[in-house]
Length: 340
Image (cartoon, rainbow, N blue to C red; front, side, top):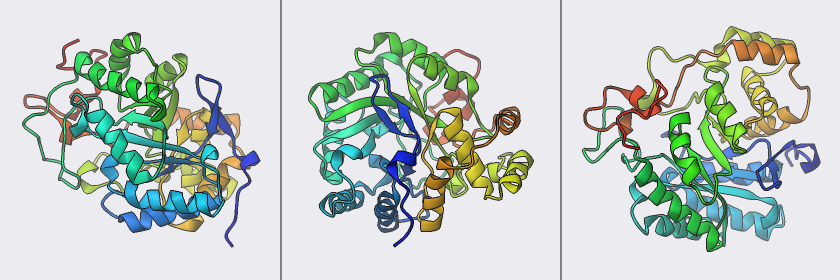
């Protein structure tokens, strides 16, 4: 039997309702490297090891296999449903009227659950690309962010809460200007914001803004996504586990640099959702945040090491006429190319 990390040792984060959830979760995006079988086995092993937050999405094409695993976990008494915190996301091609409900019902059916704990709008526009496409793919129907269009999707998400199909709703891949445009219009506010966060890309402005609004940041690519698809790689990318500051701290603590990234994430206040199919890795990813914390000096060293290096640039979502991937992220503080 592999190692089990006790629940009372895992730090927790409070949502705006006061409910607490684990300070680390398991991502389930197998990229183009791992199939549904490997990912679902990792979910089973990780829940046995002590994970309780599982981050899923319709577009990952593995929710049906994960559903079989969740059923098994519950039947075997490894965890009770109320202990698990399962997230899913509506994909960009399901933003139309009535489609969010349809997407959510499909995820519920695939995951074999009667409710989803937290349901995200995966990207803030309907720009769609097929899974596995290359970085030059463009959809001619893609268009810039529109607060009005986004709110029609959000209203459908609010309805899911009202109908009891989901407990919380969240946003993902947003920017400060986009949040400022839509938050005042929300009847039910987002409980969490999923965003790219790792030592080489700390997004301090967006992070601080989310926290100031009572929105919990959840950080994807927490160790710099070494297995991300080829389409998301460029020559300028910085590998977090090779940053000298991270390597030096790892040597001091006698741990892998990836674990320094996760300790930093958990201590800073975001919820990292590392993905691994290898048991020694997913166990150590969880265990590392329960022991031997980084010092204040080490946290400050990492804060100063931010490279502002976005790895998931989202260029496949660009609309005709957009200049480059930067247009997705409102770098000048205004919503780029979009209406209000």
